Image (cartoon, rainbow, N blue to C red; front, side, top):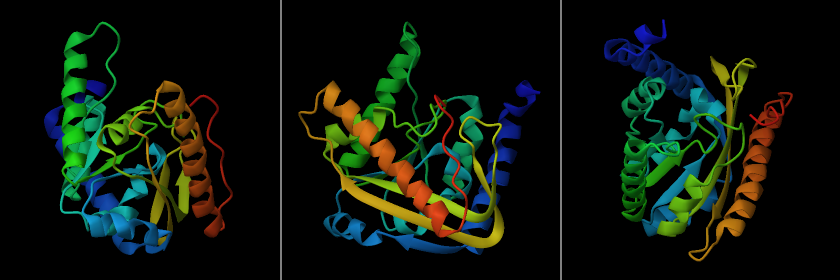
Length: 242
């Protein structure tokens, strides 16, 4: 079955199905935004930016789309795995072409070179004034823990990071999945909580980056829980260790 699902033609169909679902949820949901005013200086300056939201909110992520469409250049970071292919296709249909990047395993020189090339592409995109959207706990987790990659891009470019907590009601969370993905029904209510801007100092060392990761992970989870609470949803804490 996995072999069948990874065929290019099947991936293309799955990408269109997911894109249709994402667009349906965006168009039929009544969205409420909190904290958007913090993004205005970034839009006015034309500088690049990095947007973070949790992997489990990919099914409702186009609640942010109208905001980020204000940027002329928009990309998203997606795993180069075959499992990430239909997600990349769906997001491209929605106006967010992908940069395919993931961490290479030790000793895999080919994937390491590809990861370095993708990192450079991401840095160039943000440095050129584009927005880069990242699920910083994907594609493998741990759930709701920011990995270092996004912060390294922010450190290299000096671009601001914005955190977005997302929730929709009515919806269900798929407890069997590591990211507890939130799948929404059409014609509901949605909330986007925006936090930022946050910056990584150009001289930040490993210890400072680790401290920022912990702080911003807590902030992004708090923003996500606030989005849920504004919809009257009971919060579900992330699974320990992903």
